[in-house]
Length: 347
Image 1 (cartoon, rainbow, N blue to C red):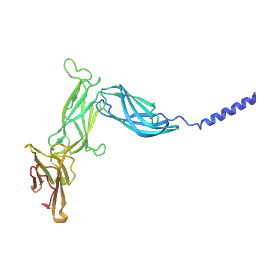
Image 2 (image 1 turned 90 degrees about the vertical axis):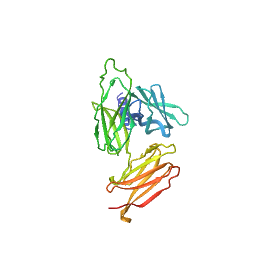
Image 3 (image 1 turned 180 degrees about the horizontal axis):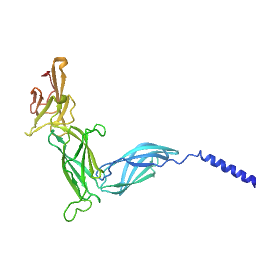
Image 4 (image 1 turned 30 degrees about the vertical axis):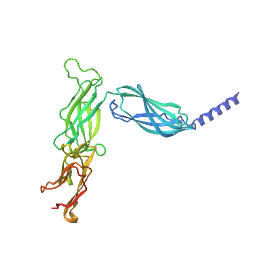
């Protein structure tokens, strides 16, 4: 009996010792929502990380299926019975139809059989969203940009007011942003009589001065500092200014129906080049550049090229001397490239 006990102790000891070498279970797959504000009006970014037991590498085929209040993230992977593949994949869920409590579920689809199995899930509360809408984003250095908050109120936020003077922080918080405009909203119901019902649609417009030109980040926060909406907008000058403010470009156009207008910047000008549009910011019409040729022939050079046959009058002005250089393209003629290497004498 004593020998049996010793043998049992030996087997138990070996088992306990080998236990340290038995691989532990693979960590579960995690679903992380990267979107700072999960609303029904904006896309939702979901990062999937972790190990999937019994799976090989993904095929690259993925999809998103929304059924009721469940959002299925479907990823096709190759079968493997002996490995746990490390996974890192970003899904972008499109805007949802309405706020509520949703469930995120990751489904692994077998690339050969098509069989699916769920390997992860998490809760996703989606709030009634406030969206920042650009009503007018082109300013000439004096007029402010006009934005609007629109969307639906939530249980805690039935009514709100935008403060008269938004806070501007002209810093570089992230990447190449010129600055951040922080607009504070007061979520308190000041209506007379019966307040709007929960989920009521709302729209509130406000002006905001965004100078200097460039990409701005717009943050809408409540009085507690909580972020409730965010977007970025590109503020472009109506009249491109080159070489640190030395030269200004103005373009007036006329189409075949007799309509006239003033061209605006299609993209943010560089120090020596500008691109303008006539009818639509996405439809670029004319590129103009002013080059410093002072070291070569003592003049600034003007080059240009257009993709249009409407009439346009181009004027390049030098602020310090009030000199100007002009070019006119007649109506109905396709504009050729043009150049003048003696447009402005250097000082």
